[in-house]
Length: 324
Length: 282
Image 1 (cartoon, rainbow over the protein chains, first blue to last red):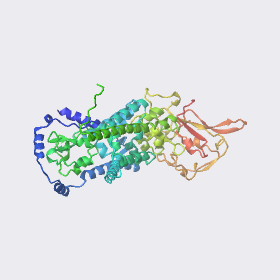
Image 2: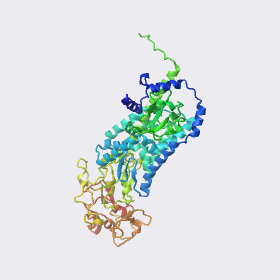
Image 3: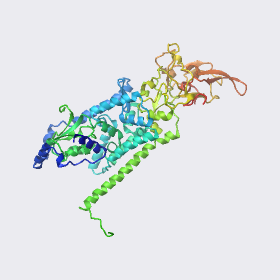
Image 4: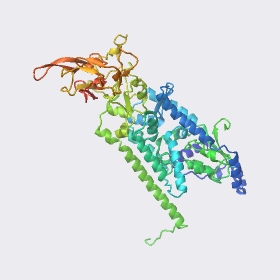
């Protein structure tokens, strides 16, 4: 049963549809909560109004953007003012002398070059442990500068969809798994780090630090595609960096946790989520336990926590008590 | 058997509509896959055609190994005291984010004394000494450890480099001031030139703009006097085809292809240039 949870979370991350649990898989506690919820009649409008009045608006959004900007700015000032705290770019860097190497970039280099040197190994190990502790795809929403651009493009997209000016076109999520495998294969076969050429994460990071170039045109094309055609297309359906970190986050102690009893099943969280399939359990009648960990594909961005009017979602470190 | 009819889908239209959308989504996904892979392989064109042969930082592996092992982080850029190293753009395809040196604009003059870019490289794309399993060409190897003139009097006068990055060549002897018997007065590259260089007699630890260091030479020998490597270049009396003895810059085996001669050459365009990745005797 315990292993199944992780397997399911990986299967969903790779593109599988979230599974509806059998009655036998529900805990007694969950069954009881679902039973009482069936007869529950709530005044959602009043509840939401009440909750909003007491909510700190965009608490996690503010923290996350502050962290993301601070980290990227640290790269920039380290070079510009030669303070040497965080040297390099997001693909590989040195923090106060310690090697930090992006896992996906390292993978591309290892597969293309077919040799691994000690520094590469050390830097990759450090980053692996770091994101194992901090939640894998936490990298995406808390560090990646393209994520920042894309989530703002997303706002525009959602607004345009609301105005019925554009329609959202979804892709099959499994296509990202295919990309991950193909980019790995292409690195092996061609001997070049093919993905790095088009990676907006690397391009934006380098542009911030070393100055802009033609490559930003490609990033603009991606953003336009996301605004006018498909919501968050790069992060949802293409980016192998996200999937690499997703694997790291499978067993991470830091995750978003869901409390069935507190949930009003309004679905606000799924509307703002970059990866709504991880929030399948919030649909009425789905959650098989009273408390659930949100799956590996979750970027730990905290948007769902910010938007939840009833406090059913929260960050949690496994083993510790709830921190926030 | 032949008349067996397919059972009509229960619910009719609704299911069909969902199936249709699923089919569309599948098709879209295939197109997305093909498009992204197609675009990413476009990066091969500039590499395969080698439309711009780049000078790599010192200690770089052979070109294809260099492109595959470089993680495109720019740490070499950050440690260079003369900012000779730049990162390439998307027009270089797979070479995007890969470091290069434009010697004419800013050459590597080994101001750092220690080839720090190699030290900074996290993936071994730049190395002091190639590991035995790494492909290398014998003509790139230098016969003896190169002596850096700036630290000739130090206990350890050599540069930790075993291979050259290229080789200097007098490309336009008919334009060379030395060959023409002409001198050189004032800043080597004019008052607007932004390149910097280390002059040991000014300050061993601080490179200064070339324009702040004017020369007054009866016979131009800038490439020889600014060359940072001992014995890499000299002015030799060469008898030309008309039987006239002319002083000619002559490149010798210790040349590492650092490009300082190309940067300082006062003639437009430079009379002496560095051929990237060219070896001695090749």
